[in-house]
Amino acid sequence: MKFDEAYSGNVFIKSHPTFEDSEAVIYGMPMDWTVSYRPGSRFGPARIREVSIGLEEYSLYLDRELEDVKYYDAGDIPLPFGNPQKSIDMIEEYVDQLLEAGKFPLGIGGEHLVSWPVIKAMYKKYPDLAIIHMDAHTDLRDDYEGEPLSHSTPIKKACELIGPTNVYSFGIRSGMKEEFQWAKEVGMHISPFEVLEPLKEVLPKLAGRPVYVTIDIDVLDPAHAPGTGTVDAGGITSKELLASIHAIAKSEINVVGGDLVEVAPIYDNSEQTANTASKLIREMILGWVKK
Image (tube, rainbow, N blue to C red; front, side, top):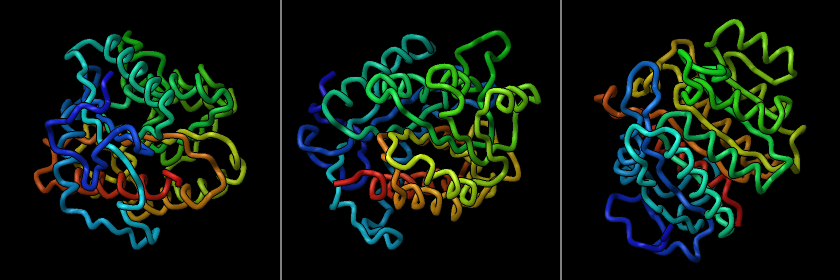
């Protein structure tokens, strides 16, 4: 993969001009091949980049500017339409190369299944990896209607790979009864409904460990993020999600990568979802990419 080739599309605001001397790399995973309700998240990465032009470059929350971090927007991985397995393989190989080059990977989805190959790549480099997962849904199914490659399965796959006690889910408010029972039996940490307060309790326990953070935009209430494939009432506010990103930034954990997934712009004529996602990514860059 040639990361230093010029990307012809829109880039996230203040993207560094070259890959080689960047500290972090933003990359898109435009895939929604396995969604169970409304497709369209494959258009999320492009729209999030486009609306980023409206962002202020300074974060009052963190007293830091985008110019303070050298990050490179490498564009989207050219995933083959309708082929989940090949797409997963390509994402894993892509992230393998980012990690080999010493970059902090920050992915934009796409459906949540795209996080699974990233987690596989991260685990190869960090065998003591932990995962912080913010979502409306458990994503703990073995399959969806007989298909194991589904956006409802990535966290179950992650649990099987790194061990369920190393996976911490927050904001969960939807899932099958069997999923919650399984999580309880195997010692997985699930914090229902809320994110910030239970996250603050967990962060000291993860101090010093490499942690990958995956955020599904539908952890937000539909009032804050209607542009997603599987909306679910009763979610958190954008203020709480921002505070959660900042709590991670100010903690003693070692954030080694992250992603934001499931933005589907077509369902939000106001574009508040894409604009919110863009601001969240700004805070992830400024808070999690250390000098």
